[in-house]
Length: 83
Image 1: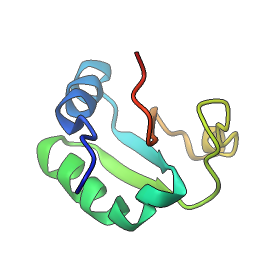
Image 2: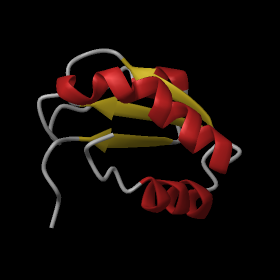
Image 3: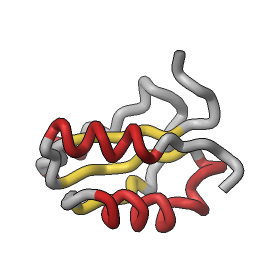
Image 4: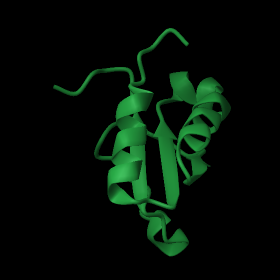
């Protein structure tokens, strides 16, 4: 991976929230890494990770359908660092 996706921070957040079902949402350029990200998170937590395959045009693009799946936590990955 060419990006620092801060997986350790993601793992920490999942553990803190005791999330069992987590969804990752990725910018299109990061979608080829989705399975690797999913595997890394699942390896380090007890959470099941779903990959959102739909669009992600920024932090305001939240998939509202996730409430029907009872997802505990949504993690968005983009190309820009949040400060």
